Amino acid sequence: MIKYCPTCNRSSEEARFIGEFCEFCVADKIKATLPKVIKLRRCRVCGAIRDSDGFTDYSIEAMTDAVSHELHIPNCKIRIKELDLQMRKAVLRMVCELNDGTVGFDYEIGLRFTKEMCPSCYRKSAGYYEAILQLRGSEKNVAKFLDSFNLFLVKGNAFVSKTEEMGKGIDMYISDKKLVSGYFMLHKSLKPKVSYKLYGLKKGKKLYRHIYSLTV
Ligand SMILES: [Zn+2]
Ligand SMILES: [Zn+2]
Image (tube, rainbow, N blue to C red; front, side, top):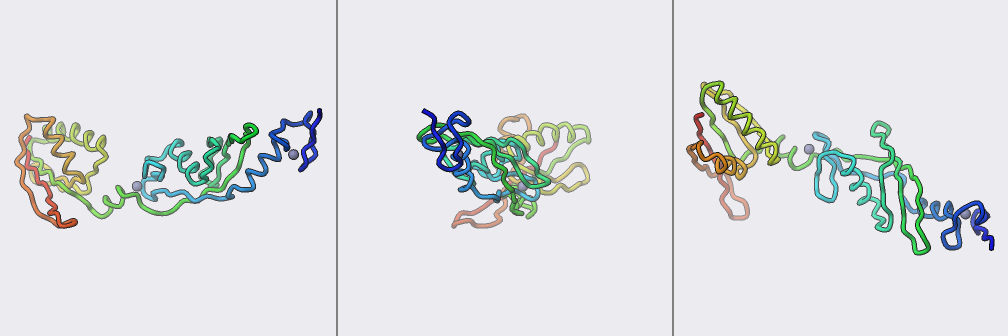
């Protein structure tokens, strides 16, 4: 028997039906509940996107996760089909599971971004550091050490907030003392002198900076 959509009068020969209504009207009904514009959290310095894992390096996956989280319609799968960051808009492909069937449609949405800083950029900008590495040695040995050490810091998501040229090497101010001590645990042949300097209290706990003196 031919069905007619009560909203648009399309027949079941012209359109697929989901329950009483044609798929176009079902899609329209869902679209009507969606916002025209959403605001996403983005770091204004490094472009990281706040998704369900916290601030994450910009990627289409992070964007998709953030958009899905913002729209919060658990029965719909969302894919970003087109993304225009200059015009600040996206076309989303949405596939929604309803009681009477599945409906898929495209939805254009405006994007706005916050102008905040992610925690890592914030600490960088504030000159945050937990460890100082006083590195000394010949130019060649210092360069060789830094190749390996800097890579280790990047992999561990640490950063160098300041570098000072000294007579026979450099002083590096590093964000993460655990990572620095981890590096020296892995490279036991390097035996830096370590000292500790109290720099503050956090919830009654003393905070120490680690100072490593290393000659390579
Ligand atoms: Zn209809
Ligand atoms: Zn950032």
